[in-house]
Length: 104
Image (cartoon, rainbow, N blue to C red):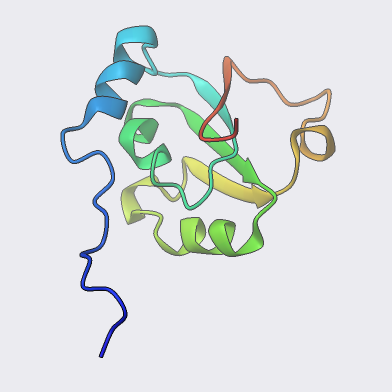
């Protein structure tokens, strides 16, 4: 018998995160560095309109989950790496937008 009969949490069922993001940022055609991307849950909300996304996170399991759940249509546009911002971002990298998602 389970210790708790609680149902799994549904994160942002009303789409408030995406609504807040698009009010602030037009992702169309941008090269985005997402720091603290975790399993990519937030990435999928905006990635279709970008030119490219690099999601980084120090959690190997989360990055593995993000890679595994990358929609086929986004595989050429979205990459995930296990890194910290200091280790990953090199002078030759160019991003139009960098943001921390669920990192604070």
